[in-house]
Length: 305
Image 1 (cartoon, helix red, strand yellow):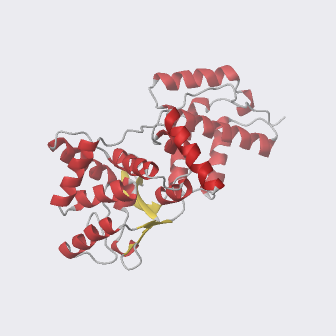
Image 2 (spheres, one colour; image 1 turned 135 degrees about the vertical axis):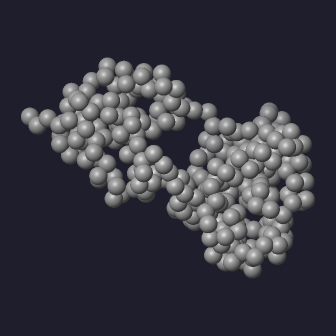
Image 3 (cartoon, one colour; image 1 turned 90 degrees about the horizontal axis):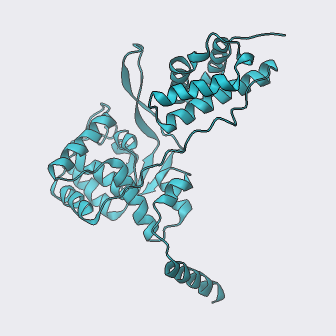
């Protein structure tokens, strides 16, 4: 019977994935294989047993990796095993018995006083931090999407923001360094309705700065702006106001506000670019018994009319 080393199969799997997934996804897979899964490099893949895998994950847990990373490592390892089984008809593990805890996603939103401070800052300032706060808090954009937004992506006439690019850090030719890159968004390109409030501010921003159609809003030039730097800009600014605010809180607050005002869930998902209903559920308003009765009566009364 043919025997294959884990090293050979895992790199065959990577070669196949390279042509079928986005660059950033492949880069993540490659890092997981080379940094973590080479634990199995000296073994034949069909000889890896359940105890080997349990020992491996126990070791990774001791390295204090996040649950999200552990789940991704498990998914990659399972995919390699499945690839080996399908291509070479070798018996491999299912990994069903390997359990990784779900990582709780932060659902923190702005308090009323924090939101007031952010609004005051936006109203009093006309700079890249203010425009980033505005686009996250009132349009639900992610940090990378804000950095990847060009002036030409904003259609003032038709009140639409087009989101199709994001700024990410990717591995450079030097393995010890990374570089900024403009890539496709993690979900399909989308259109976000431009509210009159946001439109008014954007017009003032365009009047203040000489930004060409091909320029990025945040850098105000053709240069990419680092999302990490933008995060630090917001952290430093909010710290000066004696509050702790980040872009996840701003985006969460936008989602929560839409939910509180009964925005259609599908419309909301398409606006923020996600189909993670679990994440959205955590941001839904509390629903006590009285609220459920009111909602039920409202819906049934509409049906019966």
